[in-house]
Image (tube, rainbow, N blue to C red; front, side, top):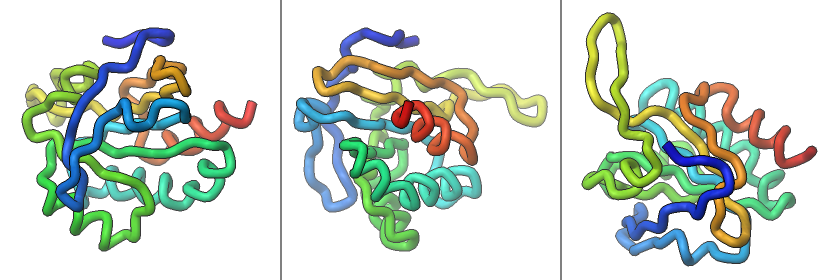
Length: 152
C-alpha cells in the first residue's frame, strides 16, 4: 500500500471520450483520484454524485477530480452522461493504476472472498506526491471528509 509523501504512481488510461490521460498532465495542480468498484451501482453512484455536487467548491480550492474503475470507456461515458458528472472518469480494465495504487485487494462480502477494487481516494499535491492516502473509504462520507481536510 502507498504511503503519504511518496511519489504518486504515473499512469496512462483512457477517458470516456477515448482520449489518453496521464497523471503527469496534472503536474502543478492538486488532484483527487478516487477508485471505485463499478459504474451505476448504488454506492458508486452516491460517491460520484457527491463529487459532482462538490465540483464548484473543489474548483475554488484548486482541486480537480478523477474517478477510476475497471469499467469500459463506453460504460464510463454512459455513467457520466446519466449523472452529468463534471469530472473525468478513466477506464482501467488492465488494472494498471488499480494495482499501482494498491486498491486491488481481497474483499469479503456475505462470507464470500474475492479480489476487487477497494474504494479508495488519494489527494495528490502539485509536485505529484501523495498528500493524503485513504483506503477503504465510505461512499457517502469520502467527499465530505476530503473537503474538510482541504479546508483546514
